[in-house]
Length: 452
Image 1 (tube, rainbow, N blue to C red):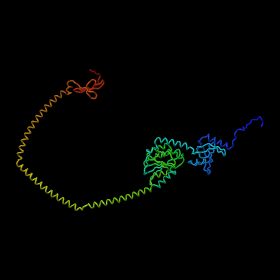
Image 2: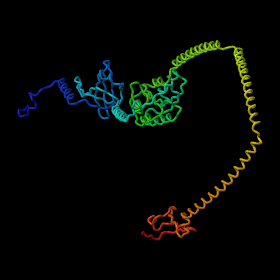
Image 3: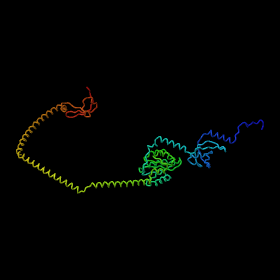
Image 4: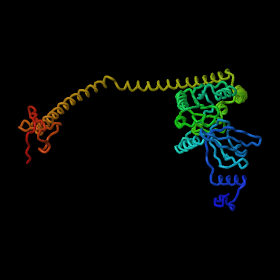
């Protein structure tokens, strides 16, 4: 090397081994990059016997290696496969052995789950504040459902499970299936329409909304706000049974009853045939026992009454004796009454002989003639007095009569309401008045008035 060439090597500069370099880079990456969310498509996934997952997360322009250790992937509620679009929470790191930049996954969910979960929580909080989940607003489910309406897909597994349970428990229960979409963008409106059809039909005393399990996207139709309000407004009690026991939807919270599965809902809504048979057998035994007790009690009562019952002949003998006594008393009373009448008639005959009717009639005629004369005289005097009083009253009446006053040249003025006008202040210019005279009446309009 020429003496004047520059020295590009600094002998004092630190030199790293490859492992030291990779360890340094790993430390820098893990310190300077906090936990972050990354979304992409899974490819090249492998699951060795250790239980760890290794795969590549990619998009249309780049890819990154990923590792998710066993203690973390055991908490994932689904099994990822190649082609799945996922969202992960990860730490940026470096695999020292190969110097590969990678992500250490701590949590994984299907893409879109976080956004849907956020929308779910926001709607849940909104409806909770409005009181749609309040227990006092929920209707009681009938203890004996007479006719059940099932709103679901007619081809899904849920309706088969429901019908199977109902057939096993109580096949006599009437069930009407109201078909509806249960998944997809059009499902909420289809469910609302089917719910309204069931709610307006008075045959149904309970409505079951159900479908099988699935991902949060599959069940999203039951997290619709309009459907939740339709369930809350329903007059018929609504039972919601969507997915599996761990699946919860907004419809579960607003329904009158939430069942963990469609099969469990069928169990809740139907009586057990064996229980009913056992209950009827118990009632049958009770009825037989009560009938036997009643017959026994009535038999004892009949025996007691039989002992108290007397032969009709004895009763007739008593009445014969009673009649004989009454006949004797009647004969005695009649004899005594006849004796009293004979004595009374004898007394009347004596008095009649002492007072001759002819004399009584003559005295009465004299009295009648005297009374007639007095009556006639009194009538004439009374009529004369009344006549004098009548003439005097007529004279007095003429003095104060308005008609007499009118005849002397005076008049009476009336307003339009036929009320007497006492003062010029009581009428107005232009008002119609009526002037009453002794031989008629004049109607005029006031042109002018003067006040004294």
